[in-house]
Image 1 (cartoon, rainbow, N blue to C red):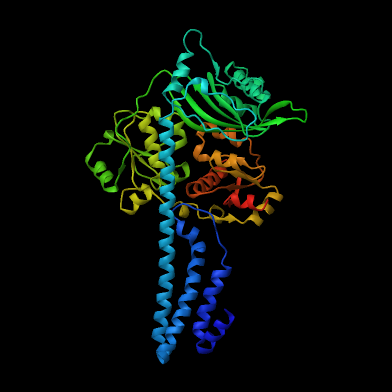
Image 2: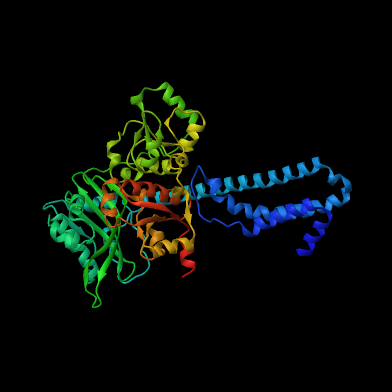
Length: 508
């Protein structure tokens, strides 16, 4: 390589400079391997992609030098030099943009595939009650059984005669960990919140604990399973009047050296579904389909406002930035936690998010609840770009332009912040957190957290510390930024993100 560079330098200094700049960029530009959502997707991955095209540029310059030797004196013409630089820059720029778009399309396609797979599994579940048993002493997570018609039947069957406020399908009562969990929920439904609180996370104020659980009238424990000696999972429904909300729960336990289980030391809950135990919902048979910007525009222009609902299913920070006039705003987690009951059955619902991913997910959920829901094909950004009416802004990046919202810590920076007392909030899906997480991190995904559960989870995160959100993947790293904004609204000091979490594991 050195000899090649010397030969180039002897023939033309300009070519040697271009060659050196391209080589330096390829070798020393730092690679950022995290994923960020629109609108700054190109910025987020350009530094990774530019390395590849810088190597290509090295060979292009070398090849052009060989050709230039045949052209002779023509190379000394300034116009030819300018055109060469222009073409070279265009090739690199087009390559970066094309790669960014391909990467984005693949991420969207993968996310939509995961959504389809998840809802297919949920609608096809038909396990019998006898299969909801505990798994003891296993470090392997058992697949979660999602809500189905048979789950409603399990609750209905126990309501005949005396009303059983506490129902458990867990048969392994010899495990002290599971026994504590059952005692905890049994005390809640019996109204003994003072005793239940003694079994809960000590750092959570009792007022916050009572506010969340005082209205719970019934608890159904479908299943408990072991993830480690001190970490267990649960499939649990909390019922109030005409609504049961099904959660996937995670609990770290405080166990002493003699093996005695004292209390729950950390508690997280992720809403998975909700249903009315007194009413069987027939899913809408129409099937979810995307609607185009043109089709929605025609609906808005030709139909009365009470003939349809535009549902803005984005997060609070996005909605506050701007929205379509007349739309109804409900977060996806709140919809899954029961807000779907406020939406009519006989009116078409058009779900709108940022890019169509969350919109499709919400529309599929609403169809399962008997609502006529479709989604805006490419989301709010595409709607605004096409000239659709809109109040306020659409760009999250412009609204939250401070450095901390886009800053991603390196591994060395993360460890330095942790040593100084920074708290890590892992916003990834619970399955990824179970598989691996940064030591002492807390798993809170605002995408998965209903508004009413937020105070209970955040009460476990001490204030007065700097907070970093950890993430992986296309949608999840957007969740990490949304979480950062929400944390600031709750009085926390958000300083940036870390991604990917696997980078921490590799150095352990």
